[in-house]
Image (tube, rainbow, N blue to C red; front, side):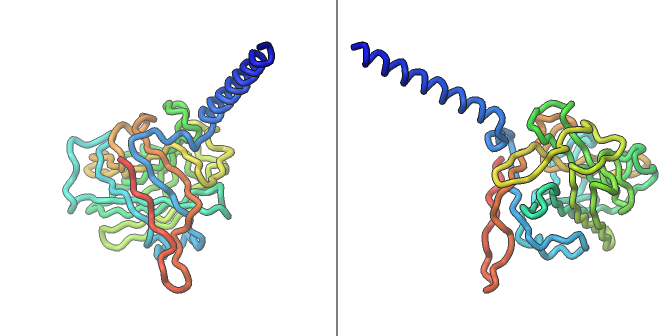
Length: 262
């Protein structure tokens, strides 16, 4: 009987320790952080170049910019504004996150210098909750002007490589952001993401959107998720996946994107 009682105590102790480890892992591992309303699965691109040639993005599924955020009573007509964005990464370059943003806008507003009221000039904003803290104080913001020159918020020449192509009313941003590099003067949280390194299964909070400005002010802010830009609950989960978007030598598609959960 004593041996059986001792055995039960041993089993109970092992179970308690195991449950404790599971709780610790689940509370600290980004893989368990996919709890937001939307999820974006970022696949790998092996031949990425910031050169205006966007053929490597052909198999990356885009999310539409069709939700109002901090400005605008209603969505503009498609002839006035439309946009979409894509995300990718590479294990060979794990401190950078790649983006393609395509915008159609009938009028460019560029009246403010960089890092001064950038939200009142046409610009794209990229926002991150690298540590999944889901509080405003943890957020970091990059802003790139539609003039192809202005870097604001956390964006700097050290941490941002980008090319902007314009054809009539169509603007194409090709971007690589590196949060481990020195930041601009208005980043939000200056330390969050300093040790960022993408890997398979990593999940971080993410939002991106466009400031659509006309008549001297911002008329719309439009992204892929509704809600205030600095509301950490109005972010999606950006999860990095090991699979590639490349095409095999015989021309067969190597993979397809996972569906976006809503």
